[in-house]
Every structure is written in structure tokens, then in C-alpha cells.
Length: 196
Image (cartoon, rainbow, N blue to C red; front, top):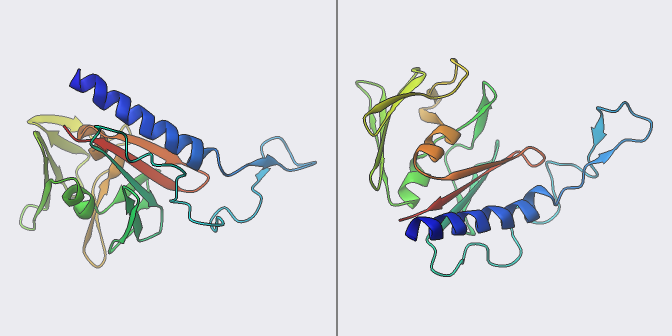
């Protein structure tokens, strides 16, 4: 029953976000343009108002422990359950995947993240889940089992100057039990964690 409640809470949170964040920007086909050319009214990067604001209280699903995190590519702003904060570095796209320094996210979820400079290893522990990633290595260890991070063999954690460890957000979020939603119009990634 607890698993069912967690699934329902996650689905409700993702549905509300999809209805307000994904569908909100209207993409209109340009008149007389070829079938694969679209224009977006206004500037998609400067959406009027607060793109993080979601009408209603999607975060307050009664009895749930859902944590919703929203990040925009290239922005140092992060929103965790409706509260804005700043990060040292924002999410980036590399090899067609979203990478982010995850320390503040893992800590907000009540987990720990450790960096071993000798071995260039990142260890993440959240509840009963443990992940170990090596800089430049396309494989990770999750709860003692080895996994390829992505179908693209180039995708691997890397260090961005001046010393930010950039980790593949989808792989890590899904291994930690989160739902991940990408909004290509707003260049935003939304994570929904349901804590046990």
C-alpha cells in the first residue's frame, strides 16, 4: 500500500507540473514556413512571470513526502518544493544529456554526497540507495551492481572549472527512485522524489 501511495503521489505531482509547465508555452507553426519550422510567441528564454510558479499546491499532496525540484539549463537558480535557491553552477547539456552538480539536491533530500580527490570518485547515499561514480567512467555502481550510465558511451561524469563535479541527472535521479521530466521548450528538468 505504501508503494502504491508513493506512485500515486509522484504521478499527481508530475501531472500537475506537466499541465502547467509543459503545456503552458504555446508553440505555433509559422505561416508559409516548411513543415518542420516552428516559432514560439515571445522569447522562450524570457517567459513572462515566474516559470517556476505552479498554480495550486502540487507540492502539498496530503500524506505524501514528495519533493519536486525544478532546474533550468544555464541558470544557477533551483526550486525545491516551491522555494527558490541558488547553486554555484547550473545544469548543462553535454553529449545530449543534462548534467548538474548534485550536492545541494542530495543534501536537500536528506542524503550524503562525498568526493574522493585521490580516486576521482563521487559516492551518493540516499536512504538505502548507494551510488558510486568515477570521473570519466561511463559505468557506475548502484547498490553493488555495475551499470552503464547511458546508451551513449561518451556520457560520463566530468569536472567543470573551477572544480564543479558534473553528474548525469537522469541516471542518478532514476537510480534513487525519482521521476524525471524534461521540458524542451523551457530547457528545464523537473525531478520528483517520493521519500519513504
